[in-house]
Image (cartoon, rainbow, N blue to C red; front, side, top):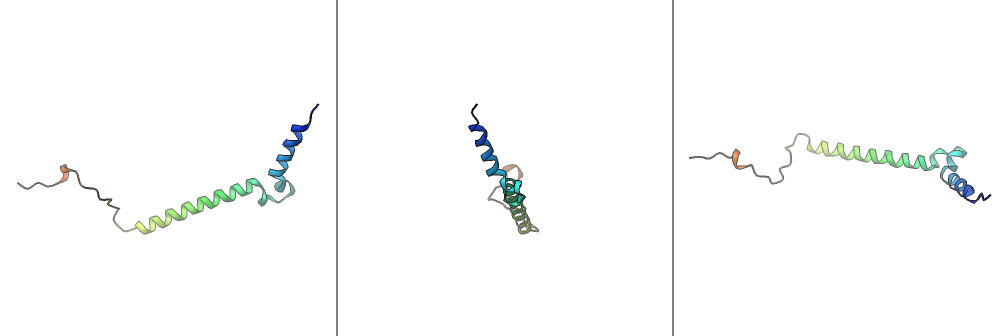
Length: 76
């Protein structure tokens, strides 16, 4: 019976979850992923808030669009 693959799996489990198994949850892979995710959410929320603050009270961006001919007044 060959136990090689079992020990390889155990090795990778200890590498990935060793910190959390020892009681250091902030060093585990899941803790790092949650930290990155929360930082991303905070960055997106801050960017959205700044964009809304700069556009508050102002006109919407025009973008150089022209009105269709239907809406133009024609004087005879």
